[in-house]
Image (cartoon, rainbow, N blue to C red):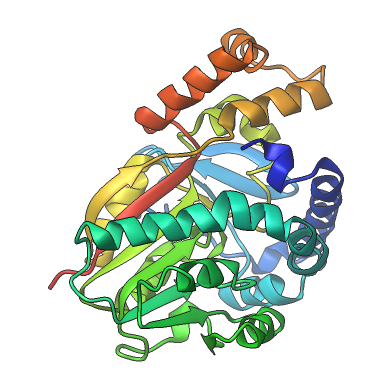
Length: 331
């Protein structure tokens, strides 16, 4: 996979222009922002790393996670997640134009991975699967073709996307995860792909995911990790650190602490990302004057084999920015 396959440059540039406008509008209400402790480990120590588009990002001295504080209040964040121009562009033009590439390169492999987990006994029951943040429903479509679960449902608060999922034939709970009560879903297996980085309070979100699981049920969570190569190299210039959409960028250690605080158990944490080196390479070509560590520049501009081998090294040693965590609700 290459970054351009799922994030064409022209669409990406337009998305980030809209994100910048959204950030500027929200910062006008900065007096209403709320100071937060580290969302992962709850350490209470201000350690400003940088300011981007008016948002302060702090680096937790205890677990190494990066997070925005102060941040918009939950109501403002929820309103942004539904009504912002960037979100509208993502859920219409961007997603629509990249849907088939994402289906082939992201959602189909994810569905196969879930099926493989089930095949090897990760869950005891195969009754209910919940996709938390279902979006366009493409992942649910791919999973449905494998006939792994008797019932697949989506959790999607955006009415536009919920309608699309229903049109594809899926049951949808049109609520924020945090508003779902114990037993309302009762999934044997659930997934939350790239949701954690957006939410106001990751602990509240993870506890909500726990409520959606049967005792012994499993959650597959993916998010951005600040330990990742491209984020460490590009730092404040990274497009993945993009207020107001990405507020939480946990470290591997931070994710462990968050899961422990939620009352669930970590089964496995890995970083199977494929794009770190390609992202750095693309940024160097797009911005030749960008200051990048010499070693990182050598790797990013190396031949195909070197870049491929280095990306494999990042995956093995949990140094890619795409983090995957498998979590169980205790029995």
